Image 1 (cartoon, one colour):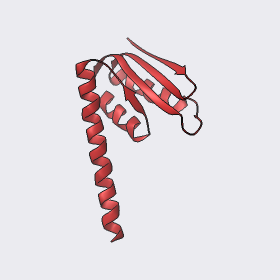
Image 2 (cartoon, one colour):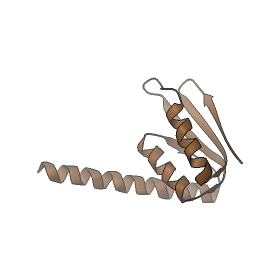
Image 3 (cartoon, rainbow, N blue to C red):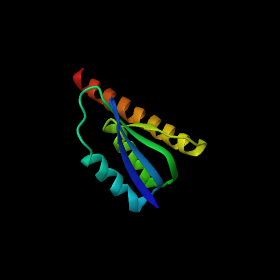
Length: 107
């Protein structure tokens, strides 16, 4: 089972994901992200993973890519929180490494 609902609010757009974020459904999440409406400056795009029951390797890669594109995430449950925190740490490490490389080329 997999379902995505989009909720528009005055300052954010929330994509509520339910079910398993696994290989067959990752493409649907990416497609929905791409096709969702452009937001005015200052608005957030949030992906709610509170009702996700399983995230496989491809799901984790999709989360990392969406973080790179500016998505914020909310979730509940110990395992889902752990997975998202681990991906966020990886995102920060990749960002810092890219910044370090760019700065070393400027010297």
